Image (tube, rainbow, N blue to C red):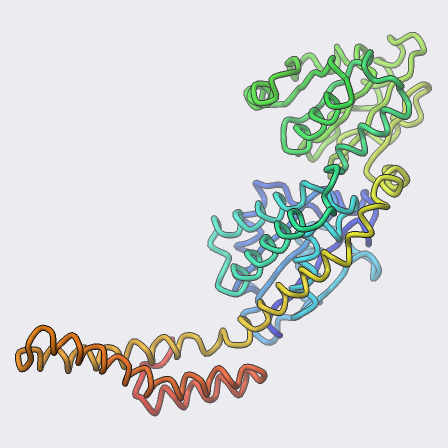
Length: 420
């Protein structure tokens, strides 16, 4: 397999302080994809979540290498990644990686239910920006199908553990029972929604939601059928009322400053407060952890809780890997014959066109019933004639370069149009 690169960084390679600098906001994707296409990529997609930023590229020239793509990523994000802070994969390994990501195997929380939606979102954004072609379209569709199969055919996603779920489990360890606590969810995106659901599922009835755009928070509360709206402008003033604050926004700046949390903590008369920052970049000033009676955690701090919650899921990984291997084999088979598919389609169209022309020229010589029989006979003969060269091309799929050469010979032999 060739002509597919996957490069980037994730929770496995870099701490959150690095990942937050590499991450792309949704509004930055169109320009980034356009830059990749202009300089490096025939096809491109960017997967950017709280735990990973990954580029998937089909290069437009042989001179394009993973190192050049990493250089572009570092320049674009204005961050220097150390040699151990990124990964670089190509061909078969790149394809498998995306499938493992979509299946939840590569997540910080094994079986993170959010990841399939995030892969789908990356696929849709690339599609909307016309940066996909047949190769990445097929790869992303195969990866999404793999993820769905793993979800339905294994227990890897059982319990729906996600970083949101883990954040609530952490709150449960500090404040038990949770029923009497008041919680604020800052951000009304997918992570915010899952966080609110997890809080409510653990018995928290005093759930409030705030978002910079109030309408989005109102829509979320309407879908959930629980929760109260806290106006964004009132958040800092009302912060002291909440025992648990879980932050998950797309802001590139701190939404909770040290000074704001210090003031809120002072107003709580010594009562403990938990703040969990699920955002990348971080939305809570890390110095908040220094404030007495305030527990401040970010994504890196969730690892110990994650490990205790995912042990059973590890037992399902071999089943998931088996599904991925099967899907990867089918993708690889498609990939090997992809270069000859256009000539096969042209050959079939050319032969059918000639047969149709000859049949129409002689239609008047036969009765309607006889003509139908002759039409079927000619169709069978055409399939027999073109079947041999088509089979010859497909049998060469173990060697794509040979297949391409044979495809060109078939074009010359049958006088087919040359590809652009």
